[in-house]
Image (cartoon, rainbow, N blue to C red; front, top):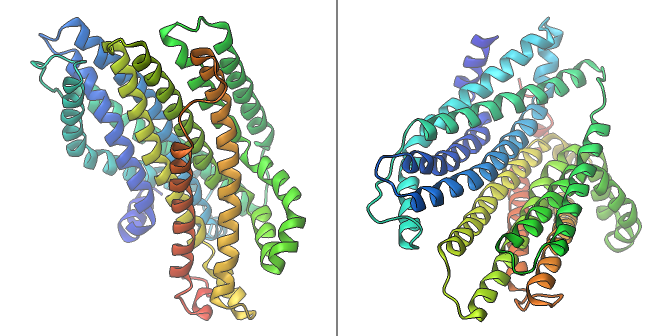
Length: 446
């Protein structure tokens, strides 16, 4: 099966392009910040510079590792789901679930290794640019030279390969059970428990803001982490939350949009797992980016109003927050685009059957557009709720106000990015898929 995995990667490289892109960018992010560990451990580096680089590498590296795993897992899950017929054929020809698992895991490991190898060059350049950023802001001494060693390479390869192998193993187990018509232990209860645990932890972190001294420098950590945990909780519970929202909107949508809106809601309910794969990055992106940007803006205004110059720690925290938001934006957009592209292109035969039944390409695009709009609205609402839960307590503690002075421009920018990526990818992929003649689209590929 390992030989078959290698041939599968070599003969059909386009299938693994999304996974390769996720592994490549993930390894670039992890290696870039892990190189700060190598630089901090180099001889001749002063204690202040070493502490600044170590803190940044640890915090952003942790965020980056988590987002890398989510990105690769989301991409691999959709990719494996698209291969349900192939897995079923392999089972019918005598392949065991263990053999299929080894094949898919082997493919994922090969692709992850290739992505990590390609990431070394860009990560070395990124490490130099990142060090220049810290030196320009005064957080690192000017005489410190960049280093790229075992910590950077080992962490990049380790996280990319482990995330790919682990995500592929879990995805193929579900796919092999579905191919044989058997059902393993349901993961719905575990998902619900994990989501509720994240919501409880996030609520506790947000409420802790009121118990901490308002002048404490690390006060912003509690609402920021609380908003992040709430975003993760909503993202994990996305399938069940989407079902409840569709139950509430089914009547109004059908009354306003007619048969097309009714069909859109039916499709979303039937494709709950694929829809959750789109909602998860959208919720985390909206919640984490909005909360971090507004909390940092409130803190920056407070420092400016006090008339004091920013300390090295203030600059370090500000740099960390902005870089974290940048990572969130990049990876969330990648996850959204990958999930939407894979799930929409997977529906080519569904679109073909609709066209053979009399639907026009414009009507099919209308259904896809409504589905994307519902998903966008749901993700933005849940992400915004998580962000507000962190922003208001921090604003009250720092400024004695309920709402920050910053206007809605930042929030609107976050919404605009999420909306453009979602609608653009969905409609663009559907339009490209509809170029295939309907008869060819419904034909099972050999």
